Amino acid sequence: MLIRKLVQAAVVGTVLSSAGIAFADDMTAEWSMMQESIRVAELCRGMTHDRAAWAKMGPMLDAKVNHEIGAGERLSLIESAKHDARILVSMHGCGSDDAQNMLKSYDEMMSQ
Image 1 (tube, rainbow, N blue to C red):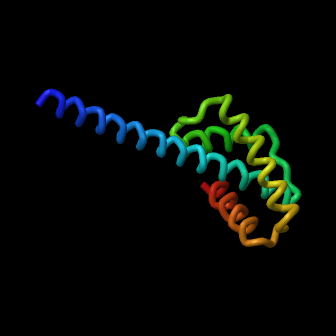
Image 2: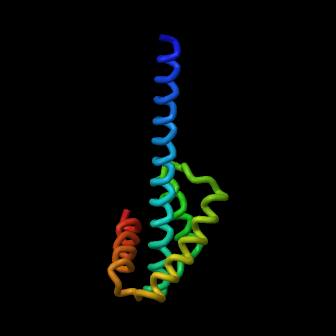
């Protein structure tokens, strides 16, 4: 009986841990997509974001992912988003469906 309860507890712990990892991965993916949409907007619309714009966007981005992403990981994700945005725009252009979806996401994010 005790062994069965220990095994059940271990299984429950593993499932909950996996769910936590999946949640963190979802947050990372969402935050990365938001960063990439900002970079695509800069590339496709010839815009830049000044300090005031980033001061507005930073807390908004962090709030959307419940402040789950640490500073070190954010820096890595920002660089990846920049790279991915450059590749998207250079290979497929600003008129591509993917770029247009990113621009739509950017507009929705900025309208909040």
